[in-house]
Amino acid sequence: MLWMELMDRERKRSRLAEQLHKHLAASAIPKGIHCLSLRLTDEYSSNAYARKQLPPQELLPLLTDNSYQHFVLATDNVLAASVAVNSAVASSSRPERIVFHVITDKKTYPGMHSWFALYPIYPVIVKVKGVHQFDWLTRENVPVLEAIENHHAVRSHYHGNHIVGTNVTDNPKLFPNLDKVVFLDDDVVIQRDLSPLWEIDLEGKVNGAVETCNGEDGWVMSKRFRTYFNFSHPLIFKNLDPDECAWAFGMNVFDLAAWRKTNIRDAYHYWVKKNLRSNLSLWKLGTLPPALIAFRGNVHPIDPSWHMLGLGYQEKSNLDSVRNSAVIHYNGQCKPWLDIGYKHLQPFWTKHVNYSNEFIRNCHILEPEE
Image (cartoon, rainbow, N blue to C red):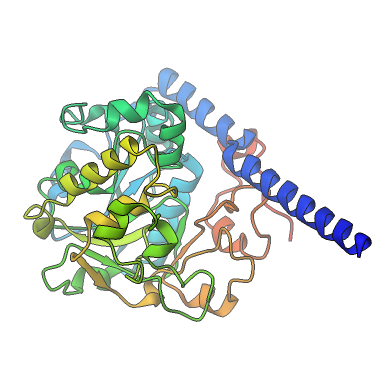
């Protein structure tokens, strides 16, 4: 009996050590990716070509042309951004109609701009913009920004890999002249032409998203509000239904015209402030929970084949489903650019990396061995 208890204790200790290792590995920026950003930032300072206007002057009107397919990508990872754009172009039936709006932070902006200036991905149009370049983005317009910036633990809790100072609910303000966009996380790969997404009738709703409460994978696709919220808190108990279906963030079709008629942004910030004031007792999992509340009644379910989740934490992801999904999403700690990424799932991502690129080579970002 004692032997079994000791074995059980050792197993739990090993599991805890493994989880800690994964957390630390996921939190650290890989040396190669850090090097890539630094070298490209240096290039921005020394090479006028790396600072050239994106897109060229004659193409600027297309940034607000609603006949084009507009993608929004928020990222501080140059390599991940290049994969998202490369995969979109490779999968599209009309890549010449694609516009990518890449939003990054002030620190990453020079390197991100350098990459897309030096290595344009023809024929897609790319605009790189830092959150510091949006005039409206002030503490007055983003009420929780100051509190988040002044509290390191809160900042990491809320933002994770997202760009400090902006979030998905700011989309209508970021793009006042656009009617519909597809929002992407930077840990995705596009494998199928996404043109039909712009044809989906959202029936007056704002957010076209895959629901995550039903599906073959009982771990990844079993998310309801009880997964994210603390229903022992009276405010949550009173306002939310634990059985309400959650939805996936990371590949979303947003009807910005419909969005501008709602109070989604205000609701988001209201609940973020509520959670701050309650010492983070309403929820504990990042930026999705306040979005789940803010978008209630404004989500239109789309077919699950458009967006497959969990490749960053579900090692047993069904490979046939991975191959057949339009967008695969490495949400979770085991990102494909990390050593802890799942080796059998990495090739879907790494095939879109140009390992012969001089910056990538010089930063010793190596192609994984078969």
